[in-house]
Length: 502
Image (tube, rainbow, N blue to C red; front, top):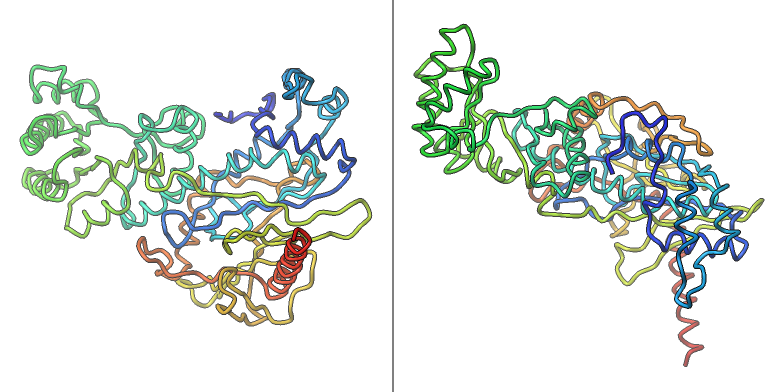
């Protein structure tokens, strides 16, 4: 789903959902629960790529999707055509009518695009009538999880290059048109400096970059002729792909064309290496270019790069200054899914107090957190390079302890006390109130800058690509106590039911 830049007259696909969301919505309606209010929380359980953080992405797409969302006549007609196993309509006509009149009048809070986030933290919170809040689950996960995965990959690659230029070149290998466009935007927001994807450039204003392919060389009688023709056609955009036949011979051919361009008042921008021993070839190519007077010519590398390969090449002394990263970036190749979830955390009937709810599991990591969840980031203004101290997940519907204490959700013995005078910021900001947009999106360039401004404030160990330091992100002490009480209560109910069965 390629979301348009102008959504004024756009019909959002409300059926971008799983059927079980609608069958639950029907059951809520049928059983008289439509007036209940619910709170849902969107989060992920493990930092992607075995890393120390994630780069949140997808809010812009969520805004464009939710704004004006409704069931249109063709949606309702399709739902009315669905049949149950006995051949009768799956949904009653009155429920179809109800959906047609329903507004998505929910409150949606979210962290900003580009926010550095951690496992278990609420990324989005949806509060409102239970039916529209439930129906939003699938779409929100779809619009947030993949972009966050790709933005995180881009951030990791940019960190690996130590600030050098990175371009996303993955459209040809992406997971379909929509996956390609989404990945290009997410990669740009995560830190890439541009893309080869022209459609993404048009839609989002991302700088577009490109050289030429091997087919250009192969279409000519010789590599030298191909480079000459390319320079004649595009004298102000010459980056030559030099590895079609023999890389170092290709570099020499590029130098010969570069001399002709210089004589004409133009500049050879550089070369691209796409195969072979990139460390060795880049060193030799750099020597050749420098000796020929092309000290400013860039050496770009491609060929199935990721953060691990980039790190290895730099450690080997490679003379590469620009990186074109494709397949492994746009597909999140070593982790194809973020594993995000959207869990009910509180529910209430009209005029009643919130009832906190919890999902249990044999796996501790899959036990959900109850409440109207928010995340508070504590920081120290005096230490710019390690200004972020810890993140505390807390319940807005309950009081906080007098002294903040953060407890690891997977290990209650890991705790961190925070001085009550410590500065903080709450990360979840209102985006929609009763279905009305109240958030001013800061723009893509501001989002990109925001990512690395934050990263500069975290301990270097958190940014390690392998075996990173674990940033303190956990539950506020009162929330931890509430969660423990609910677990014990529900475990007790489970034990009672087992006794009755016997």
